[in-house]
Length: 271
Ligand code: OAD
Image 1 (cartoon, rainbow, N blue to C red):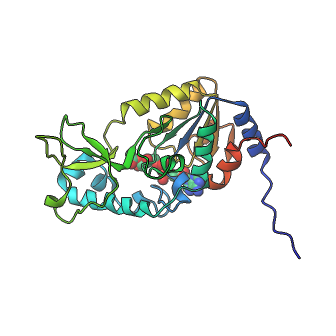
Image 2: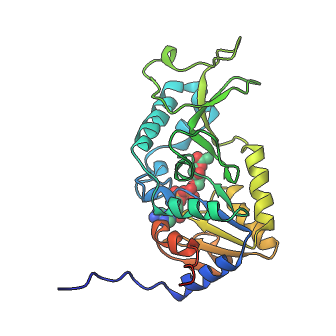
Image 3: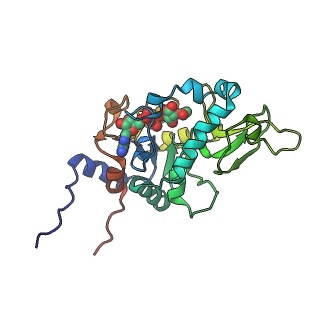
């Protein structure tokens, strides 16, 4: 009988980074599309990424929505339906357990897929986690596109984008403007509360872990710089180098679903 293959032993960088994370309480984790890649969600700039197949200015700008709301909605509806078939992966699970165990930890995410929230909360709960800061919004939420109207709601239902008169409209009395996905489009401001909370947490953090982002889109990619400016340490988890790599004390090269669980694991209880 042969014994099952043992898992590869963790690298010395992983062990060193894990030790620092264990000794720290104020930890910020910044994630990007790569963290959801192992759940089957396409990234933006990878070989099969959204921006390799589509032009952002045709699908992800306020002008595009004004010009052709059916086209924009059909792309978002397709992504919403595809996401319904995806589940959080071990990377999301590790982050969720870490946030639960460490009341001073914050998660800042550029992802609109809601998989971090789904890994944290019981199925069906729509209450956002107070230490998850979604910098680019959420694809499961809708909001009014009308000027000055603040209506928004979590609603992952299918959108019929076959004709403009079938698109959802704002239910606020006297409004009736088209409803749009509650995500940040190119040229738009990021949600102020999430942005402020992200930079506050990062500037207090002893460690910032950056996982699965190309670190090309600001201000999100500047969040780890706030930790560095305050004297904290940067740890990168990504199969590839990014503009943040030269600033990282440890660059853990590999997949988030494989590296985040050991990086964020609680120490074993004493025997
Ligand atoms: P990108 O597609 O730009 O980058 C994905 C990163 O994930 C790359 O650096 C990959 O090397 C890495 N990656 C791929 N698979 C991975 C895995 N299994 N584990 C860990 N890392 C992996 O996605 P983002 O950086 O998230 O903005 O893109 C930032 C923003 O640009 C998005 O939020 C979106 C886009 O335009 C808006 O839509 C506003």
